[in-house]
Length: 218
Image (spheres, rainbow, N blue to C red):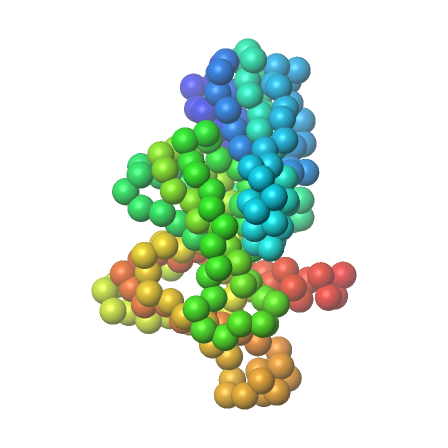
């Protein structure tokens, strides 16, 4: 087996995550993300009840997560369902993170995923109303549309991010959502829509491309 547990293959917006699994390990994976694997995994659907299924669907993730259990040492290759980068994050149980719509890729068994409403201001935009909260001890992988850029905020520092560019942020950060321009019509015609206003300290990961715009330009 490789000395490194996880390896990111390829470059740019065509990343693949390669997991070197040991017997007995369990990985939770976004449905449809498996690219290839050795014949040493048992695959099960992880539903968790109707409420959790609905919550994940509302969060932009698949209603059904997949659980890969290694029956023997082997390799599992994963990739986002669309073009994008992948980032590895280690959690030690000291904090929880929020993952924006459609950005969850995979995690180890020790991480708990919860669906949480994340807009604290204006509702009804249809843009990023729900997100996932990840907490526990283990390794988390998120994917992005385009590349990932990290923003570190100092105590009291404020930053505004277009909601479609959000990937992940510290759960204990102060944040709210608002229209990019004054008035619904102005925000609509500006092409910006809703933004999230954060206040540090904390860390934010953003994606360099807007998946909503890309899907419209198809």
